[in-house]
Length: 152
Picture 1 (cartoon, helix red, strand yellow):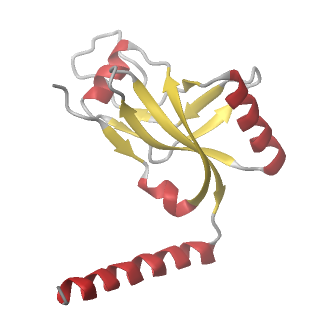
Picture 2 (tube, one colour):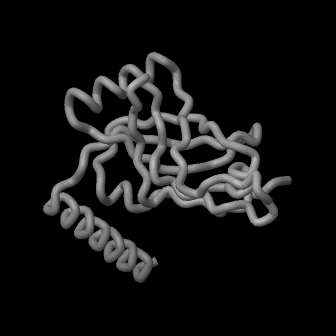
């Protein structure tokens, strides 16, 4: 039984308003998938971008070098291609170009077949007052939970 890998981008929900979600496959080499299986990856500062041929790539995703890899090892911050249906790619590209939205990765995980998948989201950046409101809501919820716990 393999352990579950669930690498999250916690900052994304704070910095962006999530509009639409997709699950995409990633094109990886052998040492990259081995590093992901040992939880040596980070998607904290990464984002997604289209190239001139209409392919979607994740940029700035950090996968540490595999400890037992020799000269076949990968580059840690290389661009990695994302796999989606043609229809989904066209829809995303149209949204990004027309309305100025961005695509951010939310979660990197390994599915039940052993393949690495990336949950991505079409998102709109939050303004400063939206971020303050999020912090206030979080604090109110925490205080309410404390009060409920005290009366149980």
